[in-house]
Image 1: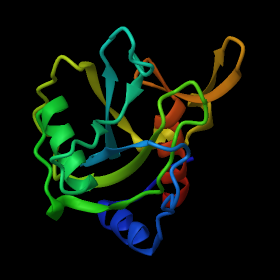
Image 2: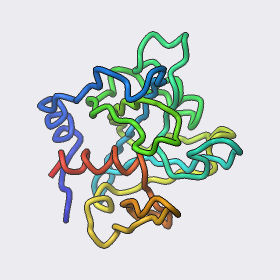
Image 3: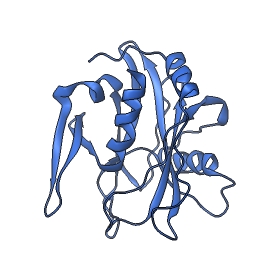
Image 4: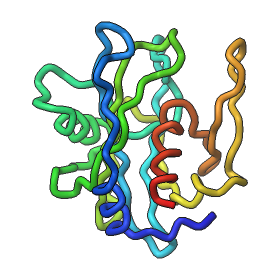
Length: 192
């Protein structure tokens, strides 16, 4: 499936989308977090910045493909401040409210053994690929064409022992699955 959308199309579709907000956290004491879907236009369509989290003992998302972002600090005035700070810290990209296209639905992990967290995705547009300066939290970064997420030939499944299989997408030789896939899939559907 071809996704032929411009940044203006994305902005317009997000303007019509009323993001679902979790009124109650999935568990008492759930943390808040925010992630950035950073889009850039290219000659072949829109691309999305992905990172691979560095391997760290005790981190349940260690080594997984992800979106820049992280947990809200007490100093963050709001989740938009969180995502801008975390993106700057992880990949060296300065985001601002004037490049914000919109927000997606809140979500939380489905697996009870993961830390209780509610994640809010923010969608940003930049005119071109920015210089990326990864921190020690990031093993690598890549730019993925949105079409790859829409194309069935890139779909796969991730087997988790004792838990079954989870949907994934193979992009740039890496599997995007879990919460990151659960953020990107409905975003792609919104663009169709």
